[in-house]
Image (cartoon, rainbow, N blue to C red; front, side, top):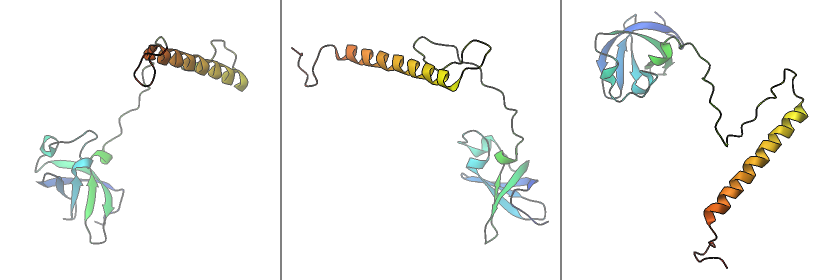
Amino acid sequence: MQLEVGTVLEGKVTGITKFGAFVELPGGKTGMVHISEVAPTFVKEIRDFVTEGQTVKVKVLNISEDGKVSLSIKKAMEPAPRTAPAPRPARPGNYEWQASKKNEPSSFEDMMSNFKKASDEKMSDLKRCMDSKRGGFSRHGGQSR
């Protein structure tokens, strides 16, 4: 069997090291799955994810000039269905731009005007907050006169 980059196939885990797992592919060729390519999460201990003798689905990432085959288990997995993120509740002081509540679309100029207004309000709140934190003291540590 001719291996090609991008091919997804099944192989048998023949060895495990601290840095990865060796997988025997169809046709007797062996490739290596680096620890960073084992799972879509951080992998501290590779034996928590694969065992010797286990059959795994792998994707061929690279075949070097000297014939070494780099594999990935995580890239061979079916992608999880994407879900829309949950809407964030509005918080006081959160000045994110929001479209008008009317059913009619806003013009670009209206949107820019609303954005500028919200931005100006946020900047004045920040300045007010910074002034109150200074508490009447000068930059040099003494009380201002």
